[in-house]
Length: 399
Picture 1 (spheres, rainbow, N blue to C red):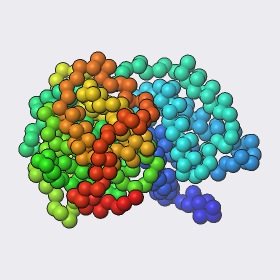
Picture 2: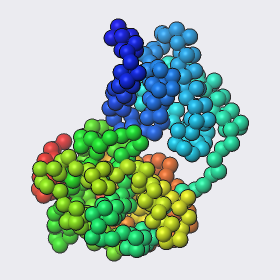
Picture 3: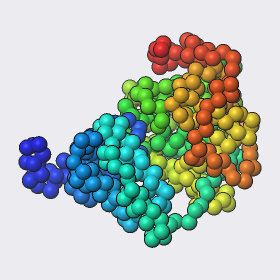
Picture 4: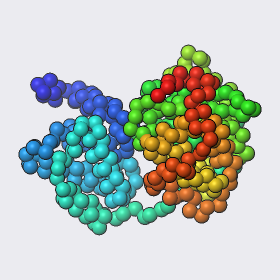
C-alpha cells in the first residue's frame, strides 16, 4: 500500500503509467474482463474518479463500505447515460447489461460481489430514473446480413487481388459462415494485438478429406465457455454463395506471411494492424450501403445474426446452431466433438442459403435457448477429434 501512495505523488506521466498498468491488469483476465461494460468501468474508475475498479467487500464488511460501492455503481450508470463513451446514446437496458457485466466480472476475478450483499434497490432506482428522465435512443432492430447480400457486396466492392480487400473478404466470410462474434476475430476498443489472446495466421490449418477442403481455426476461449483451453472451429468449403475456406486460402496466397512470422501476425489485418470491431462495423455498413440497404440497420453482430438465420432457413435445428455459434459452454464443448460431415455441412449450408426472413434473425442476438440433446447432430460423434489430420494440426490432446 505504501508503494501505491508513493506512486500517487509522482508526476502526471507516472500516474498515467500507473493507470495504464491497472487497466492492463484488470483486463488481463478471461473473455468477460474484455466486455464493453467492464472496459468502460475500469477506465471510469481510474480516469474519472481516481479509484481502483475493484473492492474486497465481504458479508461482514461495514454497511458504509457497501453503500459506497453501490454509490460507485450508481455514478457509473449516470456517467454512461450522460457522457455516452461510445459516442452514441446508451439505453437504460444497455446500462443494466453493463452493470451486470461488471458484477459478474468482479465475482469471477475477485471472488466477491462488488457491492457485497445489498439488495440493489438504489441502483435499480437510478437506472429506472435514467429510463424516465433521459431521452432514450430510438429502438432500431439490427438486421442480419443476408447471404446473397454479403456475396453481392463483396463481389462488387472488394478487389480479389488487393491484399487489404482479400483480408476483408476472408474475414467477413469466415465470420458469417462460422457465426463469429466481432471480438472473436477483431480487437475491441482499447485492446492491442496480443498473439496469446487474438487469432494469428498460425491459428489456421487447411486439409482435404474425401474431396472437400476444410479450414480449422484454433479459437480462443469462447465468451461463455468459462474455460481456458483453446478449441478448434471447423469450416467446410463448397458453399455456392460464400465459401470461407476458399476465401481463407485466397487470403494466404494474396497476402502471404513468412513462416517465422505466422504466429505473431494477425489473422485478418488492414496493412499491418489487426482488424478492430469498430472497423468491421464500418465495413459491414459500407458494404450494405453500397447495394442500397440502410447502413443504420447493420453492425458487426449482423454477420453472426445473418449466419445463424441462414442456418435456420436451411433447416438446421436451433440447438445445433447454438452449438455451432458457441452460445453456451456446454454446447461449445459438444460442437468440437461433432463429426467432420456435420461440421462441413454447417459452413456449406450457411454459405449456400439465401433467405428473405423479414426479421433477419433478430431473435438470435440475445436469446439463450437451452440445448436439447436429441437435436444435436448424430452419427460419428467423436470422429472429429479422432481424425489424425485434425488432431495433429494443433496437437490436440485427449480429454
